[in-house]
Length: 207
Length: 177
Image 1 (cartoon, rainbow over the protein chains, first blue to last red):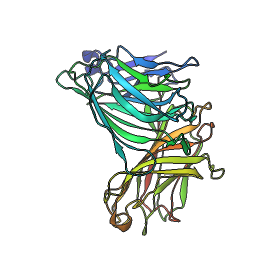
Image 2 (cartoon, rainbow over the protein chains, first blue to last red):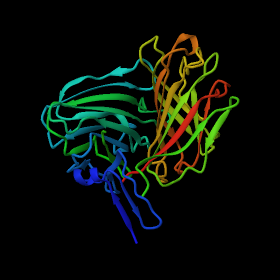
Image 3 (spheres, rainbow over the protein chains, first blue to last red):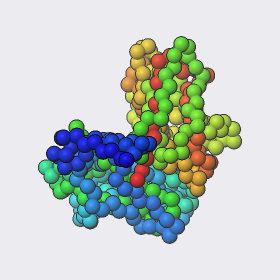
């Protein structure tokens, strides 16, 4: 016999704050950091991946992933974000990045039709590596704020190809729109994402 | 059903310094791993290092680094054909004050995927008290040229040093939908 326990406050608020199901063997616990969806690119490749109908029940979002671009000649690839289908010049972004030697580079772009999240920091089919990325989107549903994004990303392929080695960097971006984010499209450069590219969307609840 | 983000194991150096510590038999039930650490250096400087699956030969590791020592502007560095992940640059971890530690964080994405070589994101942040009075911030992308799933992670420090008492390492698993 399964037993369910709901707290008074969770029932009043319409969703379980704490639930315990006892089927004599398993326990389910709901936490503040939850997986929402995962997008994995299959053998045919993809120009982009997209998270749609994002729930409004969280405070912040995080995307964690690995990405490889189909690209000849070079081992580095790029990636971009768009929110809610907006392809207008409503994005700003900049980064500080290492190209593996010398002074770090900075790349400011005050107006763009998409937000760069990887300025050469995804791997490619030429380099044979994947880039790693963590994207933080804070206060994604706040209708009083433009949306800001912080990204950590980088790739390495043990040396250089066509004069370029791996890149690693910190990126910041802004979407000049106060709308709640309900849709996130992640776009790959050149010939798009290859098989095994994967992005996982997580929601983080506040107190 | 496991929680999305949960601790797997914690290790704290106690009694006397150690050369290294290994998180072994890592469960293969998560999507990503994160290693959060609080680490101190030793006199004359050292930086954190990692080894995966006890592999210390074959020069399967490489890194691309973005760093500053707090005294100069951000710079880039690269290490190729290494036998571990070593992202030390100039000043390394703090040691001037015995109460000073540095956060060291490593992300292991898709660590069970046996179709790809493994790329990690590895960083440490020293506020003060490193070698020659500097304080490194170092971010790196690292490649482990092996398609094997990651089953163990060994933490250590470079420059022939040991990990001091009080240093703490916690390994977390993140499970995607």
